[in-house]
Length: 504
Image (tube, rainbow, N blue to C red; front, side, top):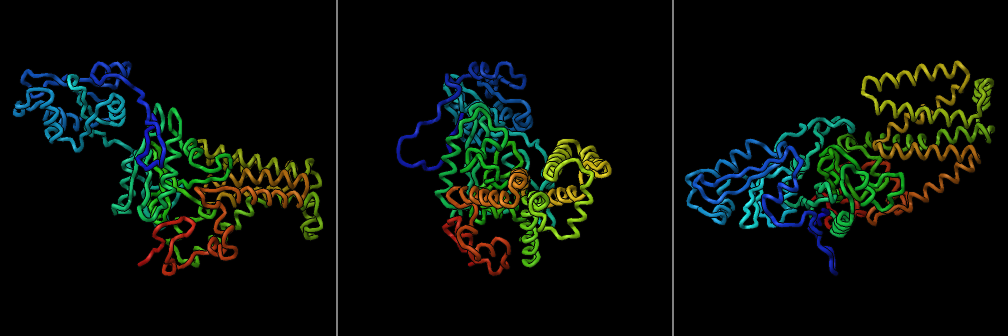
């Protein structure tokens, strides 16, 4: 079932979500729905052990804590001292008033709500004669422990990362923003999976219209199951067909909280150990969390180097092929003579050998990522040293082609975002094909088309290329250099935050 997020959806009628499991609320119906489920437990319990009307307790083994079910639900329910409540209505009223020791209790009147509670780690008490169920929070605490981030290395920052459970992830964010202004709105996405998705934002900092628009897009997402971020990204992105990322992925709660305090909105999905941040611009994918922990001069210098590496990773193979095939007069004489001598016995053209090396480099990278760590490292070493050296000695490719491709690959590795690095590698293939077809003219045309494509992307009403596309040289300075913390008095106006002031 696709549950609606609790936001004002604007004027006009809005259809309510249709129950997936209609029917009477009773133990027999619940047993029928979970038939064939070996982990489903349904137990008849006699409240007070006084021969009164029985109730039915049910839960899914593995999702609940056995101690919690026994001590907080079953034990107080069967206490003979509570025999004053002789009927089902009396026992239901007693449980709602605190007769059961669970930390939370929810009254349910529909079968679909009971099924959702059971599949999310609750224990339910079914009162057949009343058509009523009470759900108690008994979720097990067994989950992967909070550990160090594996993809985003932390030098001076926190050493914890998100896990695969939603509530521990929200707690990690709460620890950093200890304020009731941090709002958390949950909903369920997926007709069959009913995956919990949480929207997090700081009231007064996040743009309310952006929050409502995000909730509307999530409500409109029609899926059977949400088990990966791909479908979610396509649903909330303005340009889902673009290879360039439009949501920030992070496994670090401190980075997640920093973006929330900047006025952005976060998404956490139950079962995924990453957080998603929006709206974003291209410049945000070039920033590193550690920049705020370093001196502003050091972080500014590293930022300039990252943008230089971005340009090299994108255009270096294409520029080399264009000059070697069409514009030899641009190459210094000594370097040109060295290139000619190295290519005398190579049977392939410059474009084909660079294209082949790019494909080989990409295959080696994929092999290193997919294989286990010891084997992946071995494959990378064999590919980089033995295969490359053998190809040069066999005069299949020239040494300069390997140098150019390796330099472009290293530059892509310096990019902070893996999604952006993948888009840059794809774009470098297209730039290389344009260079093979028309030389520097083709590279120039492709660069213009790439800028046109990036300028046409919006992220919830914000230009993807901002602030470069809106502030000129001032925007370039803001992108490349970081101001000292004492001078960062205001938040980015592009985020349209109600409270722009950072410091009082």
